[in-house]
Image 1 (spheres, one colour):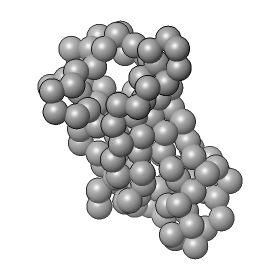
Image 2 (tube, rainbow, N blue to C red; image 1 turned 135 degrees about the vertical axis):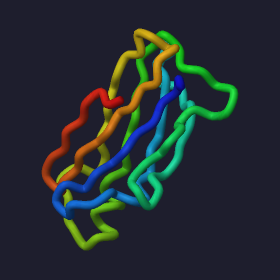
Image 3 (cartoon, helix red, strand yellow; image 1 turned 90 degrees about the vertical axis):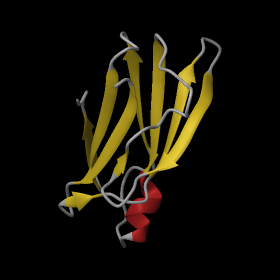
Length: 113
């Protein structure tokens, strides 16, 4: 399955981060162009970020996670209001999964499967 998905885990609370707004953009060479937006479900996931009929391209993409609102909703004063993850798709026929491990004062990400 090709496409793009994400998953946000709140490592401080030990559970999925539900309700995090996620924005996807593509670098067209003249700046970032919006592609899609979504919010994580109760399991902290967005299973398919690309709109129906849209395929990944050989390009750089940016996922922006609006984590400030998520932290505020849980009574936490986090350090990062948003997290931007920029990555390059080298093989658009493969599925790309970009997880975010989140805490109020740090985050980590990696190429998932």
